[in-house]
Image (cartoon, rainbow, N blue to C red; front, side, top):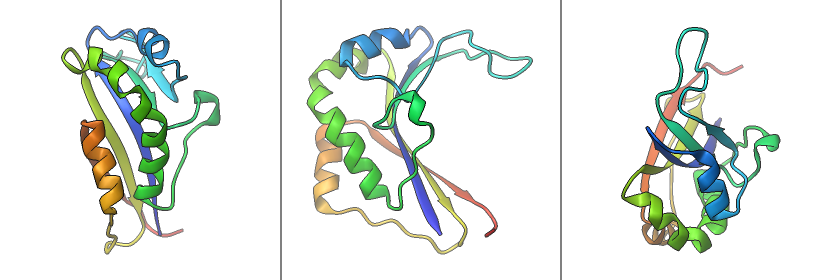
Length: 135
């Protein structure tokens, strides 16, 4: 079994997530400010604005394929590409993808169409793979 999460993330040591929300007119799926509690003893040193295509109230969204998740997120963010340029020089931006699998032989295929959209959007794609025992 494989499933995927896809999030566009903007982060940095002085990022105020509310400015990204205001600039894009999109509600984040997750946000944190510098100094927010990470756990009982540490705080976040970077602010982050994250978007998976749905507001925070929707919770974690998983997809059966990476292409499907990327397609939904890019469909909503590509029209906002020009507005994001003000953050590109000052902050880190990445399409973060979680790849969760129960088999050690998982693979990912992306179509030329989604690869073209990724190129047009112009941020790094980061795929983080996790393995867990089948239930």
